[in-house]
Image (cartoon, rainbow, N blue to C red; front, top):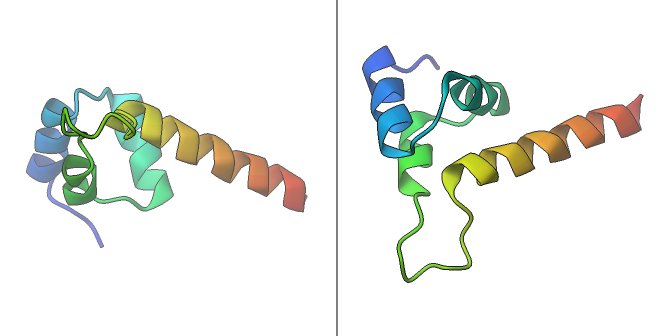
Length: 69
């Protein structure tokens, strides 16, 4: 499902992401609402910032792809 560019722009601004992170999120199948929803609250110190969360998931996915090959 394609999301409107305005939603991606809002997620990019609120989550303080760059175009690279947005592209990674799209490849992972995430949507802009899930990115905004996962912004950590100050009381949620265990939660990674959205940028780091995307990088961790992307690296895991790449590692799993290489293991299958």
